Figure 1 (spheres, rainbow, N blue to C red):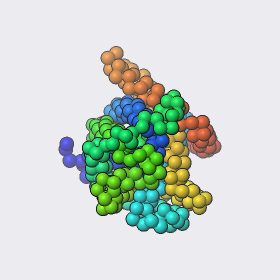
Figure 2: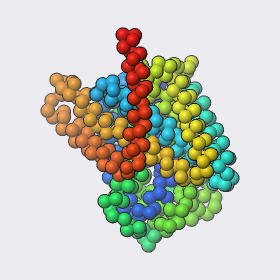
Figure 3: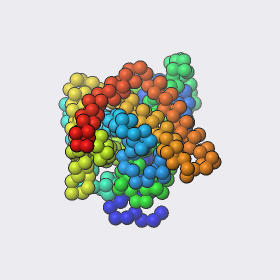
Figure 4: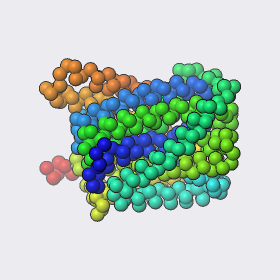
Length: 440
């Protein structure tokens, strides 16, 4: 790989951004959430992985066709379906970004409880730590994309060491007696879609390299390769680590764990490993939070450049960072965290609520992007032969069906929240429409 241009994100930084954004809190906390489904959760993981790979190929192709379009899903949907669809997706995706950052912050604080038990005992201490953490990451991102990229590489390498170690050792010492296919005997028609909805959270971020496209070196080559490779790395680690943990701990014990990887490490090697993996989990959450924080400023800025969001989102600081969107998003994360911790919810309750909220508002952009690829190709149909359509048709419809099925598996309440949040953006769209008409 050639060296990236100064100030730009290169291949390894983009790959680290993709892997780091996906392998954040999900892989560290989801084994506990999936324990109730036992071995059947592996079916959900496998289907989700295949669907995620289809979506990764969609984003890779879109990045090839629109290499300099910053904004990721928003930019592609705006190109394929126009202003209104672009606005709705930008609005929902932006909500998903800062809501997801709240979940990552909660997960990071939960694993900090390994070292500071007061964080698991006091909502005030946990809430204050969470808010301090999100503002620290905001400061790092305000210093420019290279600062975020360096943090992404370092934290991704650190997080893979404990995950890989526990997974390999767990597979070596796996106890088949602990593995139950469906411990609660739920109908598979309900259990598998439910596990898909939970496991999709761990793949959110596969589009990460496409969002800051303007800051990427050779985006037409770098973004597709980083997207596909990052997704494959995450998928392999997710499936193997779930098998390892379900074979190391009884389902009831795994379900009750607030730090399943750390508990598994203590079971394997003793107390020192418990703290070592706990530290790795904290670094993992911090790294993912860093990558998602980078994105939460770019999405509203991209929409504002197309006159779909208020113009103040375009404002940049001296480092070229869209600072208004970055700061406003962090303020919203702070409000969400403060309200949930003040309400007396536990870390796990807050995490589960927020990941469902973030997932609900991300699934729709994924479904739209799967079809946006075909819409963009239709607009340029003269440059494609019949053979050029075969692969895009396959992974576009594969990704679309996967996204729709996962929306179904999310449940009625999650879909309701997703629809309500999207509808809440309509007055903003009308305001911006009026501004364009008046100025036009």
